[in-house]
Image (cartoon, rainbow, N blue to C red):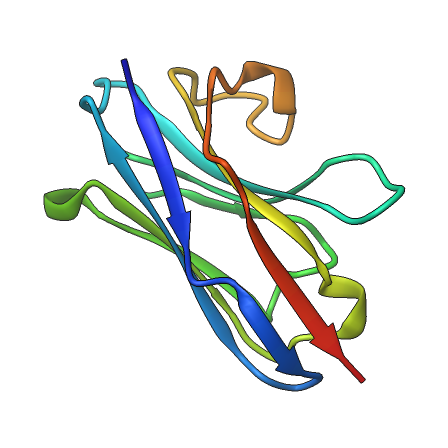
Length: 124
């Protein structure tokens, strides 16, 4: 059973940076994708970024492209989300997710494993 634990959230001013981490325990499947989603108060959960574990292909939502970078460290079973040039509209709870699929990765239902979430607050 894969378990995911996020860390690194916090409060920053607009223009600042944060790095989120997601540590997986219980193993990684041969075909695996780690994704990041976020949910702001009163809004639906939305895709932020994803990375395929084996090859390292990356995917981003248009709203974060050029500001956020997703990466993974295979030896540490950890995914990172480096968030730069943060904006107040980035304020949300951020969730790490794991999927045994490597397609339609922007679609939340394909992710069978979820972390507990970490809060990010960006003030103007």
